[in-house]
Image (cartoon, rainbow, N blue to C red; front, side, top):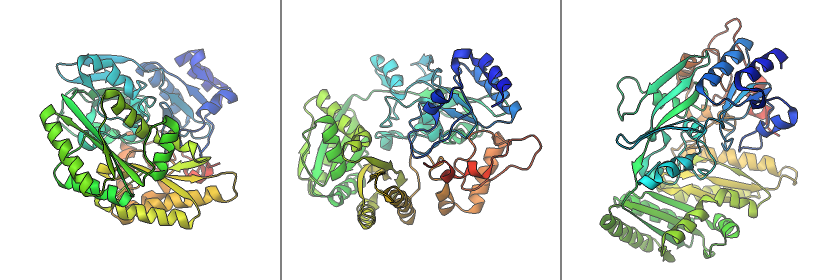
Length: 482
């Protein structure tokens, strides 16, 4: 990279916050999807909107691609650098700027960790609802980019339902405030357009979050089943009865084995398990939980456990939330997939996935948000065995096609990124993709922001002199795969 550009960036953020040595840059060469790699040209760590603006303008004038990054925990390659790009890391921007209990909102910088939002307001009886499994490390900015979900989004909604406003820096270096601290801002919902846009529209530097009062009571139960068929039927019966759980999660046998190995939980060796929360008024919770337990038993539950206290409930949820990482206890390598199906099709889809992986000579552990049909199959493999990683990739892609065949989606909360861009044309028509690209170009006509993500083929806003045009290899996920 041009030394003059690096010097200008260092002046913008401070010498110690400008990373350019190869060994240090390797920290940023991938996100949580570690099968892709690319080296940024430089990493800058701004601490304010003003510093982000300076960095964006320098990169713009140099014609360099720009990629924003939070904690790097994403699982679709959304924060993957473009080779030689200016990577803007937002981890230093972690201030809570305002808390307003009277109007039920907080204003935070994008580097604030998800769980720290609830910690900041918990003593006053408030919390922030979206709770990704990585909530102890993922940041609000990354949650906004991917429209992250979590176990309790069945009842309370995804990130988009809890973001009231944004401050965003566009690719031309201008700053815009979208929405604000009210539930229904007049005009076009540009905040909703930006949430989930995976860094293609702008760099978010402030977020106004909707916060909620803690419910009076929460009731949890853990139920085991002979197989995922009975567990899936239990989920359908519970939702069909009119019960809206705060969360209802399913794990299959392999996922249970992994969670037990990681946490020491005394869960039995069974085919599947459900973990469910209901919350609200105490009397309502007791009644609703009892009805849900009765439905689970009628669906074939082998055992139902109710935690004796808050500590035991927390341990149960620790088992569920540690499942992704815990799979490393039972497999040398694995790929995390993220698709959506109608919840009534859970049993059939899981059977197809089992047949698919068995035919490929692989195993799959299933962990998912059963209430809204958001599947997270983890395809296990050993990269040391020739050809096994390729088979795992093929199986992972076929799982997405199964989801589409049942009327679902290629992503529920992890995003498209670099990993799933090739499947976008199987879910959307050319007209759909063109419309999405027009929205992108309205925000970033130069296409400097996070190029090579989401769209399956190069889609340019027009050939314009002096505007960054990605090379085709940058737009191909395969070019980055190791």
